[in-house]
Length: 416
Ligand code: SF4
Image 1 (cartoon, rainbow, N blue to C red):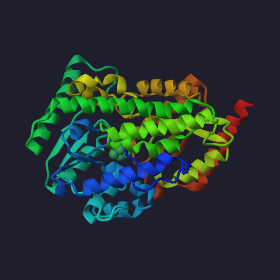
Image 2: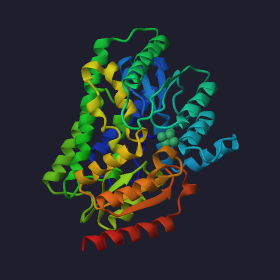
Image 3: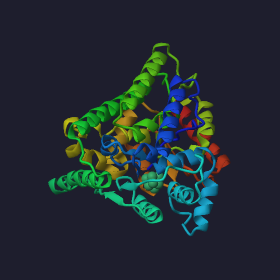
Image 4: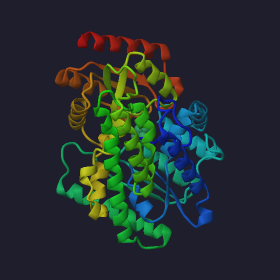
């Protein structure tokens, strides 16, 4: 699915947050640590964004996210060149832009980090986000000649059978066994419990951070949340994440107390669906702000907190699988509509903006059906923007501007 831009802040409206500076420091230190991991006797694992990071943290392995790097590449306007390099290597333009960017960056050392990402010792691929990652990580395993662990999560159509639950539970035990083989040491169960506690604590804080946007005016927007998401994805299970979101929450609550909204004259509230368009964050945030519209929530940032109730912090290994399998894009359209309905009510939104993302088929498939159902069941206007998370060749500014203007006129007329 995705990660988040790290060492360079995306072009959003969040410049005056103190936490933005703190995030920059944390992510810079994180990448320096990962780049020098082998000198410190530590291993580096590349992992997909929806994968369970906690066992890596518990075993002192540094997790690195190619999707995170994909977001950085997109925001740095470096994706087209890398995607074209991948296409020259024989990969189809129809493949996810993160996969194309990362494959090309791995081969050339390209992207915003000098020399590219730190070289992995092994790979962890979880297919709860898509099937693309399976082939992508197989390519990486062949390229680097390193082991690959596949954490398999069946799709949830309605509910899981007991057999499916047992199967997913076993994935975590197999995963830990794989990590023990790679590191040559046994997992410390007390440490795993501690990481579970920190992980659940951080996820709950992340939910509270997002929920500050239930207030009017919202103290931040989804564009800010796309940026602040980085730590819950990458370093979940560490104290750093707890401290970071606690400070951010204080900052947001202070804004609420002072009635400071991110959009100065917030009149309309919108919900965003799908990944951000990383290379157009500032343009989009300004465009919606020009209509006094705040994007107060997104299904994307919500995906890293919506399954927290399924995690038992005292039995992390036993409960992590079900939570991992239950994320937003691994569930049926009916369940997606139910989650969207809850968010529409919770954040009291006037409209839904859906990014039909050419890169991310699993997130975008079904959006036209969801759009019809949302309009029918919840009676709010919806907009579909056809674009791409990183590949700027799939973005038509004038067409999208016209559609946003027309959508906002519909919302304004409805609210009169
Ligand atoms: S296809 Fe979607 S879920 Fe898969 S890696 Fe790309 S953006 Fe992520």
